Length: 246
Ligand SMILES: C[S@@+](CC[C@H](N)C(=O)[O-])C[C@H]1O[C@@H](n2cnc3c(N)ncnc32)[C@H](O)[C@@H]1O
Image (cartoon, rainbow, N blue to C red; front, side, top):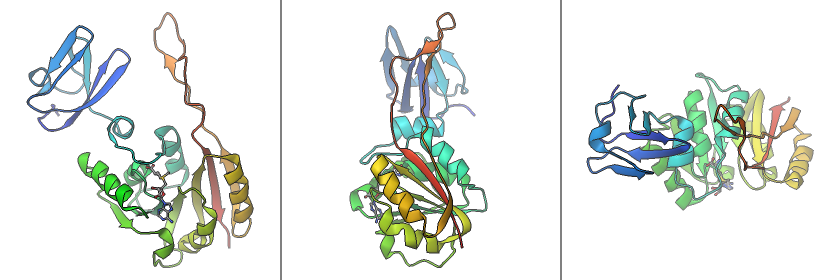
């Protein structure tokens, strides 16, 4: 399908990536090249124009380049792995809190039948809704502006849960109640101190505790000089998984 006015386009120029909305007055200058609306509209994805490659953005492009962030987000390097590992599929109903900027919700939403997400702070809640609306995402998400502890939920209601709050411990018992037996609880914890306190808490009703870290190192793609890029994101968080035991 060709590019249409109003949609988002990814423009790749050498190692630079730009996510832009295609409006009539659109123009972008990079190096010695300039590209305008009329150079893009009605062209199919994959077309080239001067030094630019014209592409449809992926979910990763949208999250990293398009989402406004008022909170720390779960980066695709972590979220893509976590969401698959949670055994989320087209039949699953999945829980998440807090919603934050809605980045992890967007990944879960792609895989699950239904996502229920809770955000306690009004400004973050409305930012997440705006991010999803801007890119037409998360149509299968029920978002609640609410502290998760206030939510009235049936027992064994969810097929998986992702907990992304500063201190998960006060919520673990409630998460246990609302998860189906054997379902996965996942979390992302920035510090080792948090990790040891949560692992202690999980002894009560969970088994199969796993902790890992995902290190992501990009490479320069000059075929004559393949080598890692000079800088990398050294740490985002420890990824934790555990399964509800009865
Ligand atoms: C690190 S952010 C989540 C980022 C999000 N996972 C993303 O990828 O965009 C943590 C969020 O949890 C929210 N939060 C903290 N405690 C909460 C609670 N008890 N119920 C609901 N939301 C909560 C905070 O307001 C904050 O927005």
